[in-house]
Length: 398
Image (tube, rainbow, N blue to C red; front, side):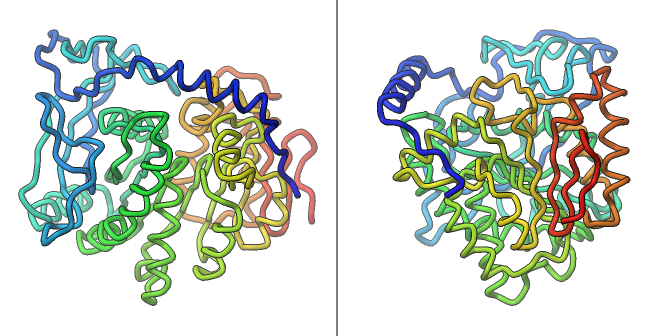
């Protein structure tokens, strides 16, 4: 089996480190009490992020949504909002500059939630979304965050990805009710399951709002929510949203490999590019696999060929560096990867054997543009159902 079991002594020490690291959870305030003045030349960009969530409303001042689950007893499946987030001019690609004091915002130095709007119902949200999508040529990107993610963290991470990937469509975030605490893994897993209907309905709402192309980027446990929603769409006979579903990217997916295989068998071979970003040194997935009974996770599965037999493309980023010591957010924190993600989402084509030269060329161009060495690009290995693209050796026909 292409999976290295975590030894129990190491697992115990690792879990102990996690518990100690959770002693002081940072505050989760999104809207600061006071905001320092900032000149327009100190702001790189401001992104209006549309939000659908099945989180319950927050009760604390400055928060919008909590880690509790939205009740379904006669209530809507989701709540809706949008948040305007400014990015400081000092921002570096792949970094997430957050204020150490959530009560005071400084837009010149940190990501800042400038304004938040709550929509009373889905129709108001759909109307606002429709206007935005119309100004972006019908393109929309839905981001689904992962485990241990508070609502404020999810908003800022979404803003960073949309900004650094230079995505030209309407940014949408689907936020499921993660508790935002390391020790609540089982709670988060169950919360992710409660969110699959709401995500399915959100994707249908984006279609009704006029989207012609819908891309999906899911991280970690958000991949479970995404695959369940896609599976439900397939069962309903509308697996590609009437031809509007484009690229699907599962980054460091915290998903049992056997569950993923069963979901893909129901979903079928994708018509468009379906990317799986894997890494053999993802410590978060190593721990997750241990908790799950030493079962391999999709995000650190080593048999790329087996996965591509399902019709997906595997991008192995094991050798790529990350600012995250867990190596679990490489897709967002490594400048090469986040730019490559943006290039992929901006492409109209399908990633197949004919695209190999173009992919290799884009990687090399990105490396030069970011001032990195060519060896950095060579650390990325892309395996499609037909070919392996290893920048160190070139494309190899399987």
